[in-house]
Image (cartoon, rainbow, N blue to C red; front, side, top):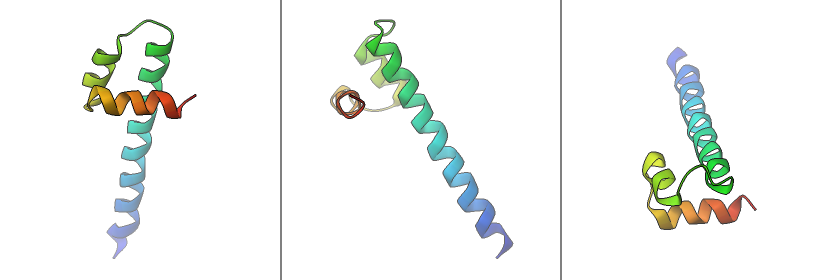
Length: 58
């Protein structure tokens, strides 16, 4: 049972890191430092999905 709290914490940490990565890639695309297709590839999502992230961040 003790590992349950640790597992929840680790899952949250992983989700937070992924969200931070997406936010950083969005900023790079918006500033013109990175092409959308490259950012999508780095994020491991389709270009269409990354476009949705861009729309949600506005």
